[in-house]
Image (cartoon, rainbow over all chains, first blue to last red; front, side, top):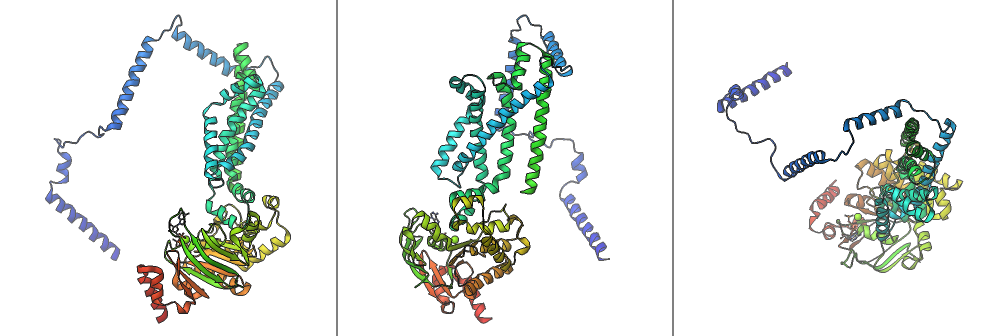
Length: 305
Length: 261
Ligand SMILES: Nc1ncnc2c1ncn2[C@@H]1O[C@H](COP(=O)(O)OP(=O)(O)OP(=O)(O)O)[C@@H](O)[C@H]1O
Ligand SMILES: [Mg+2]
């Protein structure tokens, strides 16, 4: 049996090597059993990064201790505060109940909020499609793309709520300001996302079509958009989810109506925790439905395209 | 009158000297011309000057009797429909099907709107089918291009060029990423296209032996200059050394083998 012989030979080889090793050094066993004095350094070397890390942790610890020891609780009993908050949460989450509106009205307001999210995503998507094309490096001259990308980055740096408040100066607090402000932020967000999706298509493909006489618009619609359509749709869905959350907040903060406004009234005006709980559950349910829906569609798109 | 004529064409990128240096030659209808030369010699630049994907710095290029350098955007588009081009990396839209990619070759003939909407008429579609069939791709016709092999992709590239009804097809290293078998299929198709359809083929090649086997004529380029222009049988070892400079020893060895074999 050749195979067997081979194995025997190999084993012998290894044994020989081992024993010659043991000749040269002390035996393995000894090495393991010696307790004394192989002096390893510390396992982590103290380099600049770890020094910085330790300093930061130390600093934060000191700061936390200082904060709690000097905090002015005034007349509030901390323990009571915690228990009260807990009780509030319990009423909110365990006894949700709507007094001031019917289920139908609540749904109507959810639809208003969804409408706000949908409209701003739609406006944002359409404008961003155009800007995204002009901001994609494979489709537009460098100066133009830099200009648009810079502009859009500045818009994005300011939070949505601030844009709404800025536009409220001209349009007054309400749904108009909310729509303009939210669209504005959506445009900048989607422009960045879209242009990066467009850049996925290799420049050489575009050149090939140019060389056959196709013009810019034909190339955009026949090559660029078809190859990035999955990305475009998933970015748009993501933005829709963000805009739904924004629309709830805008309903409260900018008086844009919808379920967010109800939440604001229930919490800030009537102090009705059970209603707050009810609305919270409603919003969570919608968010879950949206999530499931968009995951589903994305899955289907990825399969078919 | 020659189909393609270059007169004293020169190209400098960024004012550096000279990707192309005073290149002149003319090519007839149905000719199969190979352009060979070392890397960086200016072969790609030469091809791209012909369809003005690269603007020549000076000189005159005429295609089918039209001088290309002064054309307006619209006329240039029309001229480009007569010039097909295929590439080393195929440059197809990977997420689209074979037939969609092939029909892209028709975009140059269409109005912007019809092209944007992707409206192709019956005649265009049946022509595309016919060409796909000739190139042996009928089983892949509705497959996405990222599911094809390299050789199949290159055939799609050829189909896209053919559907343009071109007078010339420019090929920039069409077989550089293919194995010998697929290379042979591609080169055979190109030769048939030139012989049977009378379409002029201009191919950039790295493999001298392939150029010798398939071409009617070989143009050797070195540092932007045409250093050889003639029939394959006139290409001697010395001239290959002129074209490729000092790194040509192994090429010459291959050539010797071919003559021996
Ligand atoms: N876009 C560009 N900008 C500046 N210089 C360029 C550009 N394209 C090519 N060149 C230069 O022009 C010269 C010729 O390049 P070209 O691509 O035509 O060579 P080639 O013969 O096709 O080489 P290869 O066989 O490697 O493809 C090279 O020196 C290259 O550096
Ligand atoms: Mg090249």
